[in-house]
Structure formats: C-alpha cells, structure tokens
Length: 248
Ligand SMILES: Cc1cc2nc3c(=O)[nH]c(=O)nc-3n(C[C@H](O)[C@H](O)[C@H](O)COP(=O)(O)OP(=O)(O)OC[C@H]3O[C@@H](n4cnc5c(N)ncnc54)[C@H](O)[C@@H]3O)c2cc1C
Image (tube, rainbow, N blue to C red):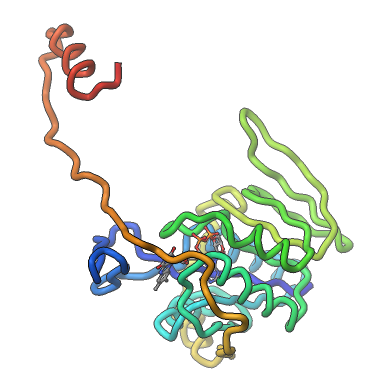
C-alpha cells in the first residue's frame, strides 16, 4: 500500500502572530513552525501501516523552501521520502490542486490529511482533493484500519461513534484519536541522522493561481482585565454578567 501524508507547516500555538503590509500579509518573522498537529496523528497512523503492513509512506507539503525543516521532521519520524511542491500556499483550492496532481503522478492508494490546518482552519483541502481525484473521502476520522483494499473508518459523531467501510483509493482526514496522544513520536537522534539522507524531491507547481485573496486580517480584541467578585455578592455577579459580559 502506498500512503501519502499531506503535511501542513503551521505556526506553533505559542507563537505571537503579527501582520504586515497594512494587515494584508501574515508576518512570519520570529514565528516557530511545526507539523500541523492533526497531520501528526495521520503520520503516526501511517507509520503503524508501514510497520505492521509494509506500507510505504511519502509526505508532501505545498510551500517554499522554508517548509523543508518540517518535512525533514516527518522523515525523522519515519516517512520514507518527501515531496515539496514549490509554491506559496496562499489559497486552499490552490493547495488541493497541487496535492491532487502529485497523487495523480505518483499513484497513492491512501491519502491521509488532518481534518484542518490550525493556522487558517479552512478544513477544505482534503474534500477538494477527493473531488479532483474522484477518490472516496471520510472526514474527522478517529480510527482507521485497512484490509484487502477496504478501509474501516471510525468517526466521532454527536454522542457516539460511527463505523464506516470504504474502498481504496481514499482520503481520510484524521484528528485526535486516530492514534493515542501517547503514541505520537518524537524523532530520536538516529531518525534525525537518517532523515538527512532520505529523498526530498522538489516539484514545480501545476496550474498556479488563486481563487481567493485576503483583503485584510484582524486580530481578536485584547482580553479585558479579570474582575473579582466577592463570593457572597451574588447580586453584583449577576449585574456584571448581565450589564458588562452580556451573557445573561
Ligand atoms: C506563507 C503563507 C501565506 C499564506 N497566505 C494566505 C493568504 O494570503 N490568504 C489565505 O487565505 N491563506 C493564506 N495562507 C494559507 C493557505 O491558504 C493555507 O495553507 C491553505 O489554504 C490550506 O489551508 P486550509 O486552512 O484550507 O487547510 P485545511 O483544509 O484546513 O487543511 C486540512 C489538511 O490539508 C492538508 N494541507 C493543508 N495545507 C497544506 C499544505 N500547504 N501542504 C500540504 N498539505 C496541506 C493538511 O493535511 C491539513 O491538515 C498562507 C499560508 C502560508 C504558509
């Protein structure tokens, strides 16, 4: 089984986010980047398929050369090879088209993604890829098994779980629960050394051009100061919740 894991290169959640060029561009100065956490769950599940079922695991990112440390980290975790599609990922449909082209050219049976990227939270790339490729698609997976070209997928639904079956080729978008958090892997020294020698192919983009462009970014309002209310002063608490917080 040939698996592709799509890796989004996202700011660490502790980063301070700023904008430049009159709040039309994200300012990456001083920002630490990591593998999108949902993609890490998908990658860890792919490693399980590699170790238990002999799958091969390729990772791919749409981005310019600054995403390469993120791809190398995925290689250090255990992916066999990496592909970087050399274009700035400024639009979800653009990203989906690039990844779909790689799938068409390289031929994968199973494509794993995260359910969303934690930077722009579009939640659109895997669904659009599935449409472009004519693949089956299951979103927000918390479990995935593959036997005889057929996947059994578990999804979390309101108040319970849904178990689905689906023929390959397919795209499964993972989230927390696809593997246990304790199973996520921190690359060890041997993995980091081996990752340096693993193939990282850079491919030219296809069919470039955005469908949307960002007019402006705005930061959320700064949080107000915390107000302490005496535990016995219920009237004051209700007044503040009603008049100031406007939640009752
Ligand atoms: C430098 C930079 C500049 C950007 N500028 C803009 C901008 O001006 N306007 C704007 O709207 N957006 C901008 N983006 C965000 C860009 O549009 C998103 O990365 C892209 O659209 C996908 O985001 P999403 O939230 O839709 O992904 P989602 O659909 O939420 O992601 C789901 C999954 O798809 C896969 N995936 C997503 N992105 C990638 C990727 N790049 N490579 C491989 N797999 C991926 C991952 O598995 C991810 O878990 C920028 C991003 C970067 C890094």
